[in-house]
Image (tube, rainbow, N blue to C red; front, side):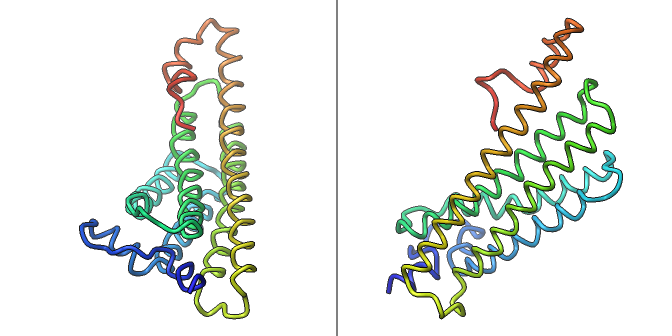
Length: 209
């Protein structure tokens, strides 16, 4: 029974939930697949030789299209403990994508970064997102009902392990973002231009990453 609960991810009724949330409840594996495929598309788009502004607009478009799945998933409540961890793991991949897209969009407006530096920064974000996406694929395999060779404990242990790894990548993306912004701040400080950088990225209290 516990295994069935985990496979379905959610065990609550879809009454009263929006259409997207109902889809999450009724077909969680397809949702994980849709999110995973979109993340892969974002990674592939980000891997072009020159990460131009036009290219990033395509990345942003893909992110916007996938955000509806994350928003719906956030509205699913009253999950059992193990299902909640699956949900949180998927949402953390969404957080990583969100930090990448929104932070990098600001960095593109920051004159303290050269084109070459922006390309390198995008490469770093892409790598971290790609690693997270591979864990999402692994998670989908774990919760797939066709994975019958796993017993309950093995399944729970694998989910815990994936959750911890994705959590580490979420922290790494935040750290990576802060380090890049700190470079801009130090450069701005030399030019007496710190207010512009603070206005662009927000103060420590206003940061979302």
